[in-house]
Length: 539
Image (tube, rainbow, N blue to C red):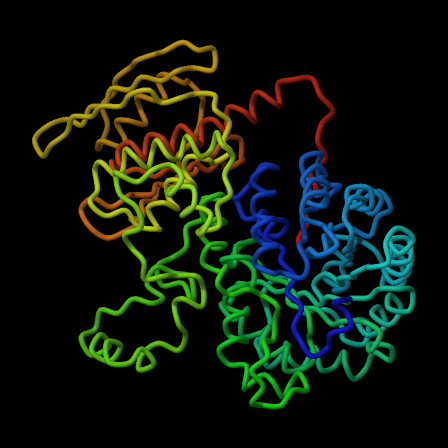
């Protein structure tokens, strides 16, 4: 079914792999992007914005591979972003060729402040470019989306004119971005309503919205837009993205799911209709959230709506009493509806490989034989240490073991000595990319600092540690701890992530992961190759 022909439901356009990846430190490699794209397809998103094909060879490859692997006839539309420039559009079209359903998403600014200071062009020039480039994109694919960047701060009359012209030459979707997260809900709703009322041919296109959470009202803005005629929502998993992030997919989907009786009339449905407003499989939400968090290194805050660790937790005695009697007293949605289960003890130290593989498949992980072997070894090690192994433990093991970080430096051993009257000292042994094992020791302000100082002495890769965070996966003294760190070098940020019951070991492994990313980037830059073109895009 053509998604543009379904005005009584909401189209979910996921831009985690494009705008979400622009979040500082959240850079993903091609294999990681492909893993997330497969999970987004299982989640049921309508459109995957797979990247910005012209931005770099890496982005082009990611769009192309996702188009090949995920862009099937039964799968989602695969989209590439492109500036309103011929070379961008050509690159997008080429990368999208393998997709059964391809979309080119082209954009140009329309606000006077962008025209004056960024583009240095007149309104008439931008209008002509928008019309010409949408028509050019249309020569490659039938499905073209146009975004007037910074629409929220554009003159409405000029915006109406631009939208009318691009629809006339074939844009099937017109996306209205609040690029800087400036608008309040009532204002954003009025903007969408104004477009509905003042663009003569608006019935020939789907109205989409894109927004950022700089003032904390992104979800509210989008829901108000739905009430006023928007039918496509551009969002990211966990709300990751530029600055304060994008509108969070899971918040939008569950708001429309839990409150569908409220939103039904705005989509022309009977108020009591139980039909879903999106085609998202909500039971895949938590799993998708965890995958994106693990691969990007962007931790989800515990009090995050829908997917935070505390979203279904109750500490207040009054709340606990109520929930035990009836969950509806303090829960407006079932934890199982987003993919959480009450099954905590799933496997033990006597479990075999087949049971392990089966449970991972139930959790959504389809591993290769090599990946399964690595994860199974870690599972056995954990099962010897813990009496109870939960789904969360398994997810942490798998995410840590099959993370696609380059294996250059490898942590062989780490040992620390510390105490309230002792100087924290660490000894580490690291295997170098040349296969040599090097051992060194260092002191620090604490055991983790000492470990990092010792590792730095061995690897000798200049860097600045700018973030260190620890999160417990499960409760209890034997819980797995997840460590996420970020390093900065030459204004670039590299993230590392690891999980272990020993937090010192996890800290060392996370640091090695980040250093491997940094070392790989430096090594790549040193090789003679065609320089990658870097294009900063923000729609």
